[in-house]
Length: 197
Image (cartoon, rainbow, N blue to C red; front, side, top):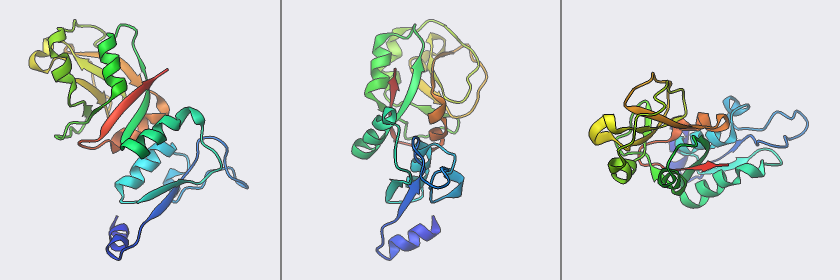
């Protein structure tokens, strides 16, 4: 970060590479990232980390990307939105699923352990959500506060750390494994949307 600020201060733009998630580059087939720590990381989290370090342009250091994940790149490039693949429980009402697909943003008062979707409580506070599937919450669990949470009812969160079960919080879905390492880089005010197969 210090070096990047120095370069920016001298009028330079910064580019860096992340590994691909499909065909790897010859001769080692081990990805070609700028940072060694990204060699076996997902290109999604690696990209988000580079942007958090004031890198201006990110390039894929391998010949190909998996086309299934193009929505991540499109949403990030054109709308500055982090688009994550997830699975949703069958019992989740359609309005909640639509809200997650259309997108929201992490609250400006960023929480340490959770991504809290800013508009969710306003949208769903009157649903009077019954207590359902109040299990433990591993990293990447999508939750909604149920009617036992009073004025917080309807708030949708994504866990950034593993948390214990809470009778006031329904577990409604899970971020897919290839996107879990993106969660630490979703900062205050970051736009986010979910994709479901």
